[in-house]
Image (tube, rainbow, N blue to C red; front, side):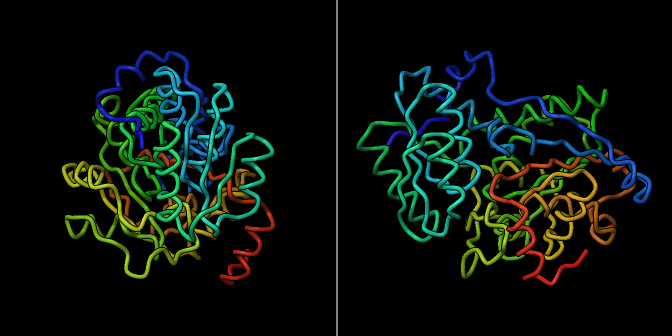
Length: 336
């Protein structure tokens, strides 16, 4: 097995001058700003070509692989990380194998095979089992394994989001809200704040109930596995245990990091409200962050008087369409 993304190859990533991701819009919500009495902005990473923020980091990891001479890469994600890996590999002329758990929607497999020409292997019922097979393929083929969230090169790519926010705002945001699963986006946000926005007052890491391994671990001060596994609808937040490295970084930054857990229904209501306001579909994992501004109860809980300018990282998600969102809303008895 060959992993990329550790200190020995960070210099290789720095040699890449043109990122694969786009600089996405930062847009103000006039309605939410008025109703909450704060300046509310959306960082629209749902507009990245593969559909999510993941390309910021994974694009750099795949670029680093090519610079080191790799002919192909392997991914074990049945979600946005796998799609971002396949997109980046196609753009760079590399082979790509994605190992999916059997629970992956058929639409994801179709996207990987038909649009991004990836080789798809189905193994296991959950990500952990699929990852074992991906590690074997990586080892046997000597192709780097692109980790969905635990990679310093990817974190560096995710940090670019904060740099763009500061450039567009013309000042440091008071608060940045991110969804957290394994923690890659949170880690990138922490690094970005250190580099570009040290005056930021708060970073809010949001999860849904049943996918809240990070909040449990943050409270305990050490990695805690979810009892019973992932039960939330927000499968993109599906890390049963957060990265120890990312957790330690967050614990060392307790002065600005706070956690929030919302229900699946709250996340879905926020997805619907965001679709009505901005005309974009996002996954429930993204809806978790959006719930902090679309539900006044959550806003009152996570924002203090210092949070005057709030940026929601709209991480997006490619595993959603109108029929899926409608079914989720009906199953959770969420009505418009």
